[in-house]
Each structure stands twice: as structure tokens, then as C-alpha cells.
Amino acid sequence: MSDKNDKPVVNFAILQSVEDYVEKSGKFRTKCASFNIPGRDSGSANAVYIPYCDKQRFNFGQLLDDYRGHGVFRPPETGKRWQITDFILFREHFHDIHCPRPCSGYRNKTVAALIDKVWSRVFSAKLHKMPAENPSTPSSLLKQAINAVPAVKYALGIGGIISVIAIVRGFGIDFRVTLWGTVVMLLLMTVLLVFAKASSRPQSSFKGPAFILTWFSLLLFMATATALFLSVFFGKPLDLRTLLAPVHAGQTRPSAPKVQSLHELFATDCGKTRILGSYILQGDTASGQKASYGIEYIVCGDFETKTLYVSFFLPRSDATLLACRYLPNVYDQILTGRLTSLFPGIIHKLPGERSETWAELKPSGRVYVYHQTPLLDSELTELTTQYEQRGLSPQFRSKDYEILRNSPLYDGKS
Image 1 (cartoon, one colour):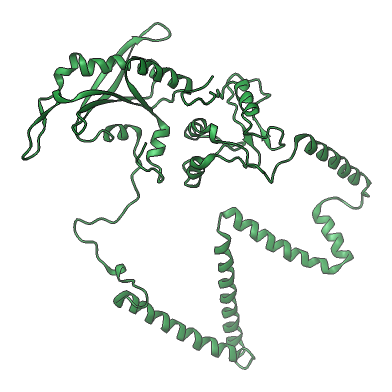
Image 2 (cartoon, one colour; image 1 turned 60 degrees about the vertical axis):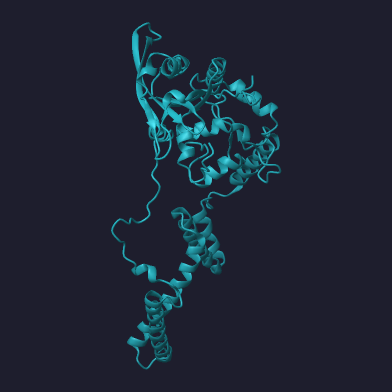
């Protein structure tokens, strides 16, 4: 089964569908020891089967890699919850994901299992041969080594340095910042040592270095203060005069771009020439009970192309798919039925130009459906076919569209 782009449809809720794709597409090295499909042996009816690389070496394609670099997309990780938005992006761009070739982390499953088995047997044999008075803990082994060779105690100093590196990495600090910070710290420690020794022993050998360091510090401070003063007030050697520029009335400092919700995008994508409205869908639920579902719509007028198009907003509901199936009927009622009487008369008039009316605009067949409840690829394919048979050109926009529009990479073309 393929979608409208002739790409095979993958249902992540069906293990066989996922296995068939990863085996036949040739994009994944399924014999690699790092490749896995978590939950494959669980037998759960609610499991979602996501191909996964233990070493996180998948190539996610240019778009998802850009999203990942900007924090918009996060790939799946074992033991961590996965956001629905990340799953939607993964599902929509799954055909771009593949194992890199060549991959420096590739290990054949059979060979890796054999090596691990041999290694475990060798290591367990060594433990059995070790005498009882020589415990196998690292600390006890290090103590015995120091007793045999006292110089080994300096290994503790090396271990301390390695532990500092591990701590820095744990805090997420850039190693370049750490390197320069260490150099500055050592310089400041040297300054403190010189002053401490010079103050405690006036006649000591530290008197000369303290004298030189004092005058050097004074001259450096004076030069820095002079350069900063000239840069702020005269723009030399660096132009820092903008630091003193006041914020005038009516001006605001630049702020981070606002993140728009899907409903806000629905309300602003159309522009200013529009008609707002709402509609109540009524029908029977799966249990046979009567239910109603309120939706919003915007009729957008494009006076340059003399056309009309309609945008619908469907709030989160279990009835989203049924509502989408009925929307072509609502479209007909809005543009050709009883709701046409709600259109205003003269709506567009510029100085020196003749008036234009909604009656001059012709339906273009474009339909934009903003739905908060995600739909499966198979459902979107079904709806697209249904709309096209009615002469409509639909675009379905959900959470992935909201993420794309708020992304710093958005180019305004989608």
C-alpha cells in the first residue's frame, strides 16, 4: 500500500508493517547489533513499534536534522517519554530516515553475541582463579598496587582530573570555556599565592614578584579603564556608544518571536479580507447517541485573483475524522447555499478605484483544515481522495504545521 507520493505506508501500530518496511526498503542495517525495534517481543496490543539505534547513529534527513539542531525535534530514547509532536514529525518524515553508510558503529549481531559470550566466560574464569585475600573491587586493587609500587599513588591525582572532566561534561559546560576558565583560575591562584607569601614574609623571595605583579595589575587596570571610556564615549578603539543610547517613546527593545498556537495560525493565515463564522455539526456517535460538534470557519477573499477559499478549525475531539468527512457539504452550504446571504455587499474599496464586491469572487476549491486531533496517514489519504472527487483541493494542517510555522527555519513557502 502506498500514499499519494508513491511511498509505502507504514503503520507503526502493526509490527509486521514496520518489519516489512525496514527489511525491504534497504535503508536500515537490520543485522547490526545496535538496531532494534523495542517492544517487538512484548505481544502488547497497544505497543507502537519504532525502529531504534542504541548508538543514536540514524541519519534523520536534512529537515529533521535541522529541527533537531534547533531543539524542535527530539529522536526517541530508551527509558524516556516521547512527545506526540516528535512522533508526528518522525512519522511524517520516516521515509527520509536511514542508517548511515558506512557506519563506524556497525557490529554484526551474530559476531557481537559471540564475542560477548566468549568475553563473559574468560572474565568469569579470571574471577574464579583470583585468591580470596585479593578482592576484585577497584579500590582494593589500587591499594595493593600502591603497597607494591608507591609511585602508583599519583594515579589517584590523574583519577581526580578525570573526575573533574566528567563533572564538567555532566553540567553541560563547553570544554573550550572550561579550558580557558582553568587557565584564568590558575593565574588567579598564582596571584593569591604571591600576595599571601609577600604579606606573611616581607623579606622573602616573593617580594620581587609581588612588586612586579602590583605594578603590572595597576597598569593593566588603567589601560582597560581608558580603552573602555574611549570606546563608550568616542567609539575608539571599539564602537560601544550604543550602550548609552536611550530607548525613545514608541520604541521597544527586540524580543523573542511569539509562538503561535494552531488556532492563532488559523485566524491569521487568511489575512484581513475575510468573513468569520461558526457551524454546528450534529450526528450519532459510535454508541448511537446524538452528539453535536462545533467548528469555526473563515471565508477568505483574494481580490487579486478574484477567488474565494475556506479555512476550517476543528477543536480536539474524537469526532474529528467524521467531521472532516462532512466538511465538503459545509463548504457547499457556505459558498453556494443558504449562508451566501450573509456575505456583505461592497467590501473592498480604494481611493480612486471602483468598488468591488464578494459577488465578483469565484470559489477556487481550496480548503484548509486545521485540526487539533492528529489523523493517520491512511485517513488523510482517504479524505484527500474524497475532497478531490468533489472538485476540492484540501490541505490538512495539524500539530506538525504549528511546529513548522514556529520554527526559525520556516521560509514562508508551506
